[in-house]
Image 1 (cartoon, rainbow, N blue to C red):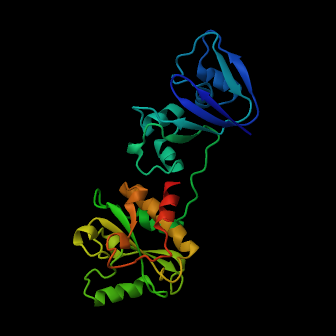
Image 2: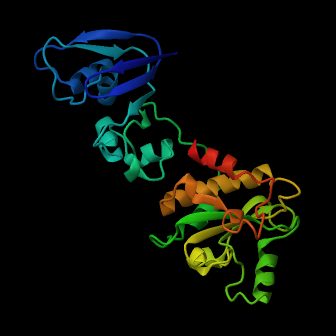
Image 3: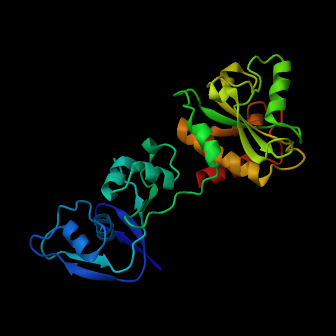
Length: 292
């Protein structure tokens, strides 16, 4: 396998390809589509491989490189004035696929110089591994987040090594919280009833209600609360909890138009009041995974 980098007046691209390429000299009345069909490759592959921005502008005598192996993907560098939709259309893929493959949570905010991986026809690149099981995804997909309401995700720990969402709901009701469980989501450590890494969706998320997990009501109105069972001042969260948290944050970021920097920790809002979610929880590590 080798990596080939091209530059033309319109854009920079790099291609991951196999084997070598042959040369085709364009003849009178030939089209890029006809040439692609003749060699058994896609038009977008020929376009990308030769740096052609407009497939309709071919001229007689132009030499085209035709891959004899399989071109798998293109790395495209965004230029001024371009959108994800425009780039997707140029290469014959959906903007949704590009957003998923490149983990772009805000398709409307791509930037000049940003590198976009584009799968070419017949060699579609797999999206990032799914961290949420089908049952959890089904539950999440059944709920439509209130547009514009959620501005951040705040991570907590329960500070109790053994606990579960149902018990926490009862405790919070007893404290006078009319909606019970203060958080929108709870991620179990497997210590009681729920399995390790299992995500519990509270009635607050199902009803798109304000949280009760931070001091100021203004923050509760705009912040999604996620609590991981455990005391992370004593020991770190389990690997399954972290995977579930990463998957849940990725999902919520996409649905609520949030960025990795919008994922934060309870202690950052109350530094003199709490150490939640504890010294063994790494917000930096979580954000780094969300940026990848």
